[in-house]
Image (cartoon, rainbow, N blue to C red; front, side):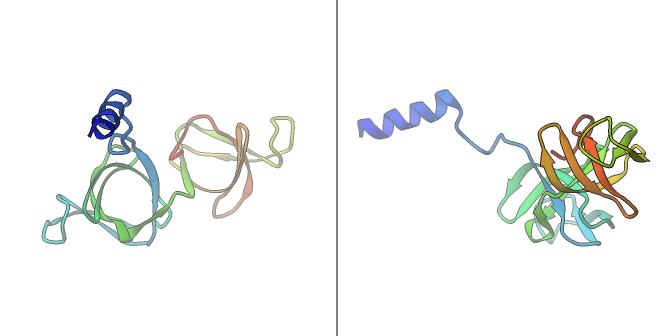
Length: 145
């Protein structure tokens, strides 16, 4: 009994709970319904039409996850429509480089709002791909990590 009380106090004191932890996932399909509430009986609020789009998970109820995107749009999505995060959104215009250094050859300018697929992370850099290019960007001002 004393052990249970001690563990309960420890969890409360140190707030060891993943309920308050927000994290990122990506959309699994090209068409994902976002609902007003956590159930299939709730009406559809809007539809995402972009596979791999990163979303932040801010709450969960049974098989549904409450999400936010980088524009602060949100709603409820069934967990079967989500997958491990593999993408980011550019929040500030960035240069895409050939290697993970600012002294390497620039490949392209990445505009704000562009979806990038993360291939690899190394220190302060990420190897990413777009529809047209593969290269490295710094990990600053990116949404989805």
